[in-house]
Amino acid sequence: MTYKNIFWFCFIEFILWCLLSLVYFTISGFYPTGTGIAFTALFIPGNNFMFAAGLFVLLILLRFIGPRTAAVGATVLGSVFNIALLLDIFVYTQYRFHISMAMLQLFFGPAGREIFVFPAATYFILAVALAVIIAATWGLGKLARKIPWGGKAAAAVTLLLVFIFAGYNGMYAWGKFMAVPSVLTQVTYLPWAQPLSMNRRLRKMGFEPASQPYETPRAGALNYPLAQLSCQAQTKPNILVILIDSWRADAFCQDITPHLYAAYKNAPNAFYFTDHLAGGNATEAGVFSLFYSMPYSYWDSVTGAKIRPVLMQELDEQGYQFGIYASSKLNSPEFNQNIFSHIDPLRISSNGNSKWERDEDAQKEFLSFLDNRDKERPFFGFLFYDSAHGQEFPPDYQAPFTPYGDKMNYLLLTKNTDPTPYMNRYKNAVHYIDHLIGNLFDELKKRGLDKNTIIVLTGDHGQEVNDTRNNFWGHNSNFAKYQTHVPLLVWWPGKQGGEKAYRTSHYDIVPALLTHALSCTNPTKDYSSGYDLFDQTPRPWTLILSYTNKAIREENIISVLNNYGGMTNYDENFVPSDKSVSPQALAESLKEFSHFYK
Image (cartoon, rainbow, N blue to C red; front, side, top):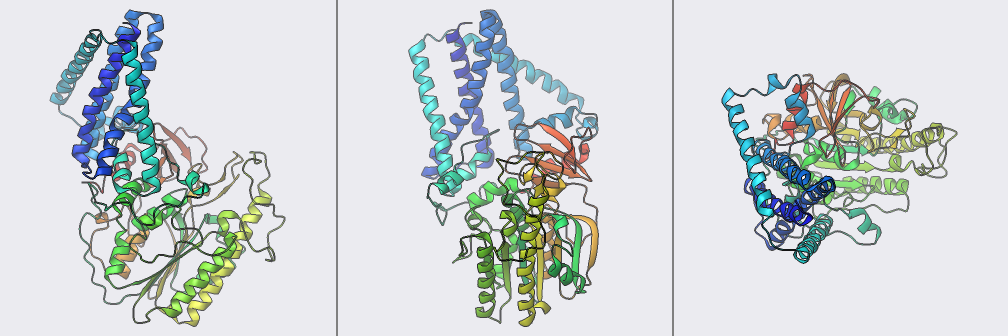
């Protein structure tokens, strides 16, 4: 097999894969708009180009051994690529997610026979199918040897595919930045698609994303919620959700948060959930999981279709007023394109040169909202404090924890760096936020709102400060308890509070609000991946996501799935473990990624 034969064999495979890729679109739906068609035309060949290039490189290496070795390798490797794609198509048609190494480990593992039960005829059909695929791949190798075109034609085809690949990545980077529905939604269709994203770089260059989606969105194959909500609230309490960015679980205590600690201890209607997990280890995933009550993997789908959470939709339909006040910008991450997409006008940012100044501004504006709203209607409030994320507090603030260092310079930190001054600075920032929220609670009480306002207070994710001396600082780097275990406090008028020690998660908050505050009677599975917060039923597992990885936590074992299908296991301190989550937990959690697709 010559080098020219190898090229045309890979090109034939590439054409075959492009045709097979259309199956994904027949399942998930095409976007008939001009932008949608253009992206589809670039996406299919652009994504398959990577696999064709990988096959080409492998076969070239075999060609160095000899032409016969390359010919055999073309049949073997080509069959492997073809089988993998066809198997992924089968999995996608059944579950709406792509095959991964975790699924293969589950299938071939010791518990596979208990979970996957097939009749004998299935294995016979599978054997025949494999034989047909191998024979067909061998035939494609024969066909490639008959193509007469030479090096110039191969160079022209390669150049065209490189331009298509660059166009696909460029169009996705633009589509993600401008919140183009037909671009964002499609990227989940094909397996292992990892196009270029430049949101943060473009913002640093001074660009701003569109304030509204580029084109009229559609829901596509997303099926959220599974059924229309049935809610008949007789009384409508006010609801206030407060988030503290990077608030780790052990940063709620009498020393660090004296006002909040006293507010919990002195209120008979206050709940403290001591074993609460965020839905992610970064802001996007944490806030998304709280409001949507489903995994962050749905981000592109709901953002592209501009589908707001069922909680926000029901609040709107029941006449609630919205007071949304965040210290950091609500278009970075793009919460203005999903969670708060139907609030007009939406306050995007706060005033101030530092995080603590913007925290103060957000709280001041929220109190102004309370004074100027329609007092005959209930309100939904959202406050998001950011000082702890930047370890900031006013220069004249009487910081109780000393010695404290400068803000973390991640380039200078190592696993041997003493975390104490950085931890003290973090504690001081949380202490300052506690001071602000203490004043907020006093203002709510002055207005009599403490008697009819449900308050939910938690963190979007945690914050690690080299706790395990493995050089982990901040968040979004692992799924240890320091980055995912957050406080959850709830003040609920009319309920008898107390400490709750059973495991809960961000997915459980919306079901509690819809069920007990808005009197919705739907089963939680209609709109949620969680449970009612007050339901003490043991949670068999919890999903926690980052920007790139997915983690399944069962008790204190964490199995992490990366985007390439690999699975690694850790304990809650993120120490590598030889134990993994149970096959049952793995199988059930994988289904959750397709739960809200048709």
